[in-house]
Image (cartoon, rainbow, N blue to C red; front, side, top):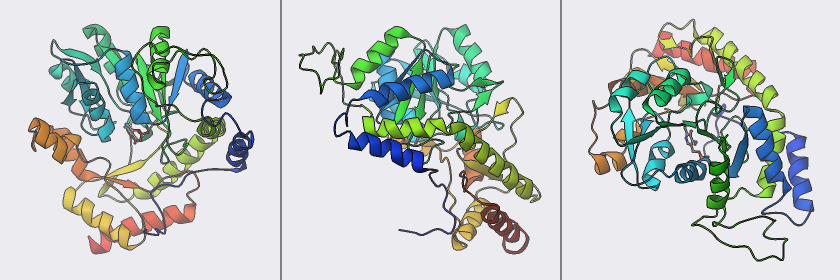
Length: 381
Ligand SMILES: Cc1ncc(COP(=O)(O)O)c(C=O)c1O
């Protein structure tokens, strides 16, 4: 395993996390279904300003369940970005629907409403934008478009809990939204995900899909009652131990966001002096939480890759988030996509480089990263 001087991310944890999990373990029961789950759900719903939340064992299973709960299936099309983690595009495939890629715009790297409009057909059922790296997409315009066209709007907010567009939390715009709590996210539970919605019917369906289609009026493992199974379901439950971690992580979300934003401001202050680099610079209405810190290398792919390799030599981890989904082997083979299909996505994905960003990053760490970027641009590249 590579030991980085500065890794791409580090989980922020404290004694509260340890104590909550320990308490949950020491109970000696409720390791699977238990009271932490409902507590974590109601805290998340309240935080985002939604009626309901349902916890899952991953963001991916949460997306899958969300599409099932809304009845998306064979013959349906869901418009998604290609500039994303592959799970966004795979989710429609899981339910037999077709992911239709639309291009992105350069301010937020989110779906471009004009490009989305061009992709709408009579089979389109939903739009599923992502909020990239903790930065809201053009969610106001996308919501208006979805409403005008009579389409569902699902927010893949995996990377962006706490982000806001025009003062309103991401996850509160769509018919439903997903958050991920995978280890590298703004708050983390190891693995985990959550769907939020205001729709009671969808909420009830999500709970059934999550747990075998079982009517769980009581805790299955501590109730002697026989429960009925009313639909097809999976085991996509988050464990009660995991939810304990979710609670303590969510309790410090405001602090974590403050730390990430402080670090990003510091790093941007330094890197904005490097002419070849473009730092994140979306408008004021986009309140960014910096799950990732991604710069653009203006000179394109080779310069970007050379910079990444230079930083690797210096012990600084970087990564390309994202290479386009439509150009992966799987999507090329299945749908015949090729270079040129999504010009903006392809151009941006050749320029982006994600640099280390996490709450406990020190100014010394950031000086080291920025100095090495600057040194490379002036002397090596
Ligand atoms: C945009 C996006 N969608 C979906 C996912 C999937 O979430 P998970 O890793 O929790 O399954 C992720 C996270 O990796 C993501 O970044």
